[in-house]
Length: 220
Image (tube, rainbow, N blue to C red):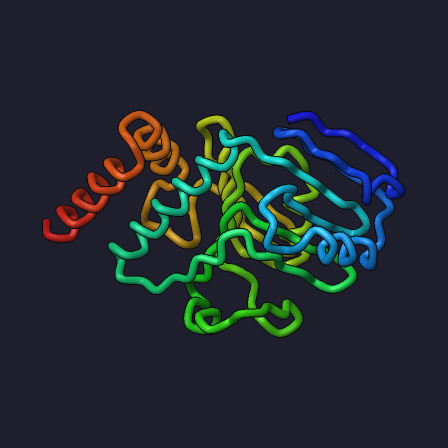
């Protein structure tokens, strides 16, 4: 995905083609919020992230969108098998005023599912951040920097058949072989395997097989 740098003056005239990825420096918080208001937070394209004065715009391809939706279905199946509560907040806009704004590909409240259940508007000065965020094919460090400002404890990045787990430790993300959400599972290898299976045989078929396997393991 190409990355371009443009001036803040071109913000209002941006026309992104599919697969484009733009980084725009020296953008104020007020400009970012005005852009959200003009384009509407409910739009799917472009995706808009902001961190410490840098605006990031992305127009994902279908190849970007499919994996993170499949991974979201996998997460739900695993959580359901463990009889755990969850709330899927998808690509909701999360904002830490004056510092960062972010639209995850997919995100979940798990530990904080009960607190998030009835939230229709989020205030990151009082509400907790998502417990898990999932991104597909991230090519900019701006995204992880924004997650760090928002204090999301765990981020998964899926890229070209590989899953990297990032855990927030002392304000920065470090790679980990183990997930906080699923400490007993080899998530870094399990998830890519299941995504590949979904693309080969279909997501519904993969999920049915996964649920049967999880149920069999529970009964064993």
